[in-house]
Image 1 (tube, rainbow, N blue to C red):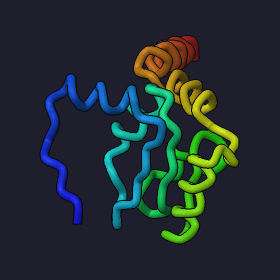
Image 2: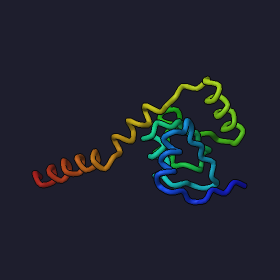
Image 3: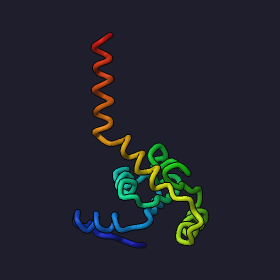
Length: 117
């Protein structure tokens, strides 16, 4: 069992931006903000299915999602031995599309179209 106490904001950001890999293997869905933060910081995401929202972390598109711990361990090994095609750029683009600014522009357009009806 590994217990990590809450980190100060600057320490958390520093760890994330200097990390190479983000691994999620919780037994239930985690915090989607952490996944977005990993994507924005261009950290490769590897996750166990059921620990991450699959509409955010999309397998083989912007992350890798595995069905078992053994498969996840193999994925981690592939990452560190450079046998994996990285998805970090696609993940960063995914976040750009999901940003409040992008969503806000889409909402304004949607509401303007409603006014025109």
